Figure 1 (cartoon, rainbow, N blue to C red):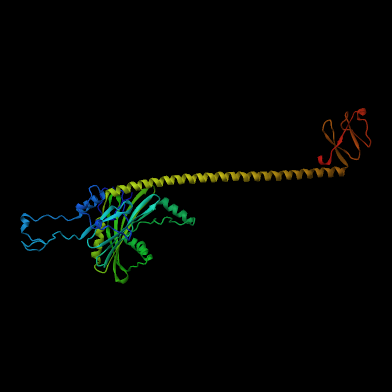
Figure 2: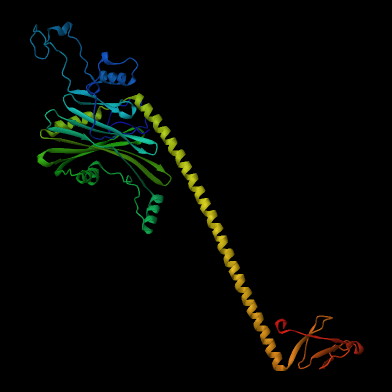
Length: 437
């Protein structure tokens, strides 16, 4: 599973180094007890979700020590020595712990963050599925009690990009074939935060009817180094919404790159937020920063999520393997069918050619026979065959009976009436029919 959490220097417990930021969506519903934090008397003994939230709450609460010894003579909160303390002496906490709940896991706490104590918080948690792998995405909205200020956290978007000789060659080949160079909507070159806001995020807001005017006060914080060579960059732009409401759009960009062969592959994510107010924008934006910087993860939820995503990835690989095998089997079946069809076409062509050749040979034979008959007719000759030897000879035509001397084969005798060939030692010849000529 990728890293889950808000982009920023948030604290993460038991999550490992391979985690990635969580995204945000809108229109949530939150149970009041988890929204306001969990007390010790309300923590079930064997509930890891509640136990986690309580431990986080204890870690975030201020430490209050009793007044004793040398401190006994000091005033507390401006009260005179000896004055009775108010009935409630607990310090007013500016922030409360807000839990993000996973509806797919029986509202288990996924992570928690600090929000202003008197602000209303809303969340929406769902997953975007890639086959059997679901990526958690959350949208969080914070509203001040007088409804004059609001903070909205938008989804984290993941981007991939590669550059180098191999990638450049593939893109050039696509251009030469008239194909789109960018086929993946999440293929985008890394960019600076302010550039991302101007070229990507603000146009997306405008597509949904949210337009910021009078843009200015561009700010870019120095890059922060992260483990494993990753970096985080943050930038913001101020503007004005309809009705004169001041707003600040901010984005946090996490970026990492890796050299694979001759090409450099970039993996980066962008988490945007919008802080808007009718009052002091810097004060409202400070709440934005505190909320993002205070995120802590529930290790029990992270473990379940990692296991689910590992199983989903395995299922995707198996489905991909089966699809590949089915595709290859289909290709082989199509190839075999095409081969059979090709052989059938070739057999038909061969048979057609042989028939044409036979007809041609027959025409040629008939033509040659007719030519021989015409020539012999002009010359006054006919063909005769010797029944004893099968030899064929040409003899002057015009006789009913033709004989050949056995003593002198070059001597022929033609007669209108039959003679006794045995008495003269002659062999009578048979006239060749025209169809056998």
